[in-house]
Image (cartoon, rainbow, N blue to C red; front, top):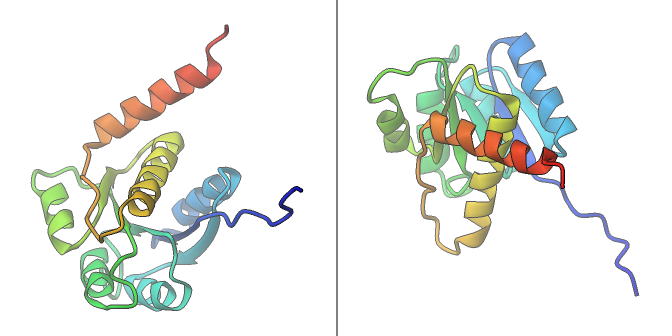
Length: 162
């Protein structure tokens, strides 16, 4: 007997204030097989995280109204949303940014610009890490260079001619 139920695709909440950048992420993530919701600022992110309970949040840290730092801090402090993994997305590569993101509750840290494939690899890693862990442990933060190398290696394996 075959199972005709559809597998539920993970829901990613993309939080980015620049519309064209947000649209690019949304389209690529849909193409990669994710369901996607959008927010343009930290207040919208908090509201949508609470309402939708996404599988992961892709959070720009530099946002209007309520920044990504504070939005993440709030999301991680509320019982209903605290187990949602947050992937920090920022154009700042300053020393200490990744540690600061981890301190407010981010589960991963990716710097912009990043290759779309690398972003998908990191999102899947965080989702899989959450699924494998019965306890609400945080996924290990990896430097974006490792994420990029992992995505490049995966592409090379996928396209290798036998």
